Image 1 (tube, rainbow, N blue to C red):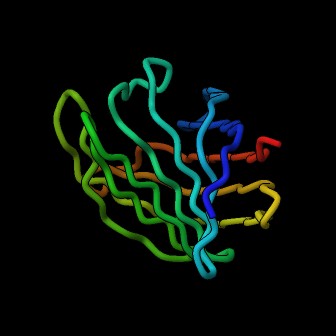
Image 2: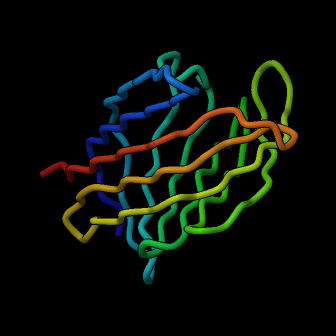
Length: 141
């Protein structure tokens, strides 16, 4: 069943000794299908991807994907202890990105909850940044 939800997402990007944090508060949806949690929201100018929809899919503490479709598209695979190569489309062009996942902490349940993912990105095997995404889902009542 699809539930309306308030989604808070904090993104932390660290490059060497400098870090940048951004936070997004948006309305979206939260669905559970079998053993998979789905968080979906429409992107806006605030995310830099207006005209796109982002869906975060999570299975336990081992696997997640972040799929963006629309004006900008990407399909990032986040899997604990593994490195994946993904295409990342931006309004300025596409890139091949490597993603090595350090951990996924999934505290989601039928009532919403929290998700925390930490990973390292590289472009063409050159270090780009260490990243964290922290998501909180609160169901509308």
